Amino acid sequence: MARKTKEEALETRNAILDAAEIVFQEHGVSRTSLAEIAAAAGVTRGAIYWHFADKADLFDAMTQRVFGLMEEKLAELQADSHENPVDLLRKLSFHFLERVVNDPRYFRLLEISWHKCEYVGEMATIRDTHLECGNRYLAISEEAFRLAAERGFLPETLDARQAAVGLMVLVDGLVLNWTLDHTLFPLDSFGPAIIETYLAGLAVPAAKGA
Amino acid sequence: MARKTKEEALETRNAILDAAEIVFQEHGVSRTSLAEIAAAAGVTRGAIYWHFADKADLFDAMTQRVFGLMEEKLAELQADSHENPVDLLRKLSFHFLERVVNDPRYFRLLEISWHKCEYVGEMATIRDTHLECGNRYLAISEEAFRLAAERGFLPETLDARQAAVGLMVLVDGLVLNWTLDHTLFPLDSFGPAIIETYLAGLAVPAAKGA
DNA sequence: TTCTACATACGTTCATGTATGTATGTAAAT
DNA sequence: ATTTACATACATACATGAACGTATGTAGAA
Image (cartoon, rainbow over the protein chains, first blue to last red):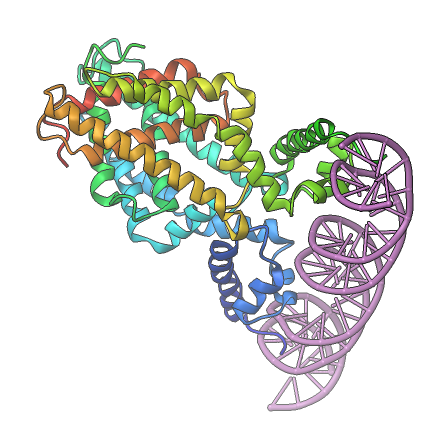
């Protein structure tokens, strides 16, 4: 075999990423060799080393391909104006959960990230990605909660930071456990309901203090 | 070096487990060789292979040593009678969070389990441990919520299973994020407060439905 | 003396990275 | 329109090293 046209090369690259997703999900990141991925993609290691520097680079590209799409959605939702800023958070988290349920590629990536990879060494970049993403979500949520309290939708005494942390860990916990065993509970129905429960708790003035 | 007395041998075994905890935390489970652990413990691989079959067996023993202690606490708390069964859940989750904050060994094990190991192959036993532990917690919580609703502490319309799942994922989410970056928020103050918020939300009749 | 609790030594496997081969696409020169 | 020259997109081959499991050695306890 020899040189392909540019679009054929891009197909090869995507085939490698597709294969990586599946093999990583099956055997975990550290236990899968590049040879396995190559075989699953129908190429040799040569192709992988052509497109990617090493396994970490391949992993990064894989996550970029899937999680990169989330940015637009965020911008889109932020563009809409909400009288009650909490509605933005509701939409955001619901959209995220829906994505996890309906997009198998998104599900795979989350399962790999949470349960099939170690946040260590060169793979720690995924940790940073998570942290960065979490911090952005936290910042948005905190601001929304602050505004909501200011506008009287939530108690004035509300600790916006704490409320934001609670929402984030709740969503994370939902996805974490569902990717661990999706028969444990129905995410599509329980997820939103549980989030609503938490948000309702924020409205109870007596409970938000320690 | 040569043969030690039985208690010396047990010291060696514990030294190996101690070393494993630290090295696993630093480099992740799959990337640490038994040679590294041996070096950190001040022994050779021979000692490790004497006490344990392989890395997975060592890992199991390590988790057993730390998580095994939780059983008694659970029994102790369950023995106490509570007028409001939700108090049991409160105590249980608060105790767990407190443990995470104050017991560095517990923290280490959780960080390793969540972020420094892949739930795959022979290491999947830790996944089963998590699932089993989660299911027990779920069962206890569900029963407690059911009782609480029955006794009028919570709305009759409460979905006990859903409430239990929410509590579990909330606690998991808290620990998960805090082990990921403990500067993100103060677990000792935020944790209980966030749980209280959720529990308060359960008491709001309008919010428990989808 | 025998068994224990290791240390040491050995052989094998396996993944990695690189070096090299090679056929084709592409652009420029003729 | 060919031909030439070079870059591209891989496949193949090779060298290295690391980790593993086991086999064997050994000094002290029982």
